[in-house]
Amino acid sequence: MLPLNATILKIYEESPSIRTFFFDFQFETMNPGQFVMVWVRGVDEVPMGLSSKNSITVQKVGEATSKLFELKEGDSFGLRGPYGKGFSLPSEGEKTLVIAGGVGAAPLVPYAEAARSAGSEVHTALGARSAGDLLFEKRFAEAGEVYISTDDGSKGTKGFVTDVLNSLNLSVYDKIAVCGPEIMMASVFRLLEDREVLDKSEFSLHRYFKCGIGVCGACCIDKSGLRVCRDGPVFSGVQLMDSELGKYTRDASGRRVKI
Amino acid sequence: MYTLTGLKLKNPTILAAGILGTTGASLCRVAHEGGAGAVVTKSIGPMPKTGHSNPSMVKLDCGFLNAMGLPNPSYPSFIQELEIAKKDAGVPVIASIFGGNPAEFKEVAEGLLPAKPDAFELNVSCPHAEGYGAAVGSNPCLVEAITAAVKDIVNVPVWVKLTPNVSDITCIGNAAEAGGADAVVAINTLKGMAIDIESGYPVLGNRSGGLSGKAVKPVAIKCVYDLYTALEIPVIGVGGVSSWQDAVEMMMAGAAAVQVGSAVYDRLDIFSEISTGIEAFLQRKGYSDVKKLIGLAHEMV
Image (cartoon, rainbow over all chains, first blue to last red; front, side, top):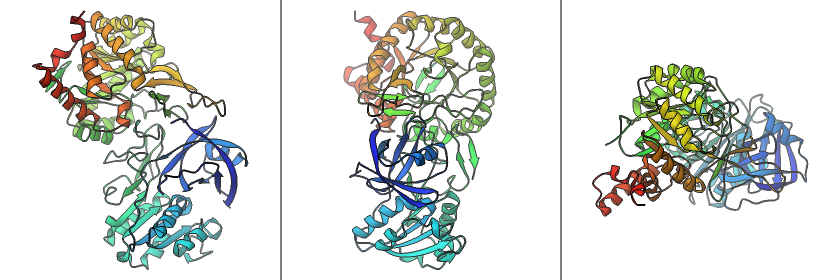
């Protein structure tokens, strides 16, 4: 597909470096965890998780996102998607644990809401650097219980999401969905492995996307050769055993870069 | 088993260059899960390149447009990936390489030799990388010199991938053959472009790029047909092959084997599907060998 033209209806400032852009198009068939390619015309096109059927939540990190932050309501950008494989939804009566770090909360908030709608009891471990960086606290709280942690202790437990997880009985959950910075996901991965609940978990990975549609192979992960853009971005914990997760990623040229 | 320029292929389908070829692991996956008879790597050059900005590939109704811009980690970093592919793919691994002149091609080929690729495919056909690809591949003298330079230092087969963006592809094919190529690969993508009418912006980050997929198949068939007549060496057909019927058609035009690129978008095991389809077709038609198909169309008229 060619990018569709999305007009910005509303921009919501979540934190000084994170904004949600609501647009005039609804991805009705989107599964939480799927992504869209956001084309900031004349600059670049970058993958973004959908934070709702008609929004993306963006952290200002590079050239394309900086340019996106210059856009105003009424401006437009290009959108392709939804692409990739999202999180698998729980069945009615199953317990779901959502583990979100930083802007990783963006694809997880529609998941928490969908899990709740499917009849699942949802708990969320929500972490951020400080209280002002916590994302979607209200939406997560409406979906179920929320355990907050901040690096600086300005709200909730002082520490990382793993500190919160240490105090939870993880064996009660049927589905565990994780998204956040890779170092955090790698720590969560090890913790879930130690507690022998990895088989219930799913992780949303972030890699450099070139084509975004599963053809070029720029985002393939070791050792499986799975494509993050097409076979992911959500992978089961079992798929990621013995993988590059937490060890290295690749830059735009394909060179390995240590995490 | 099927022999092509001395290489033993499991079947006559080959993963095309630039597709799922950035890592050793993905090349192995295409061989094992996809069923490819051989795999070609992403094109590797002398220096690391990040490629063009995105969008770098879009799907159109009739095919795909791409302008990757030859992103690659350069040969010193790619060696480890080639070694992984060589160790675990279980099929021949062909290193696609590019450079701006004979010396650069030689440098890259020499640099990759320690990983023992089964063959080299010279990319003198990428339509959207300034100073590389078709920029050198539309000049017959340069194509001959590049081919000869690589042939001079390697003792494995050398294939030359040709661009259709020239007035006469056989002229370039002849130059490759004169330079000592063991086979030619035809075709690379056709120059193309798409514009977003809402904003007026060209869609690709590089503004224009190369067209692949179903739309280019008739062009590829014609190029392969002409090259088959003009050359002594085998022609490997590529361009819009997405079914066993396409592969048979390509072989009847003169292709000794077929490469598959964009069609991995539909499914990864397209290679198994095509080779199984060819086998069933041979049986149905009573052909003793897949070689009977090669150039069949030339005998009809």
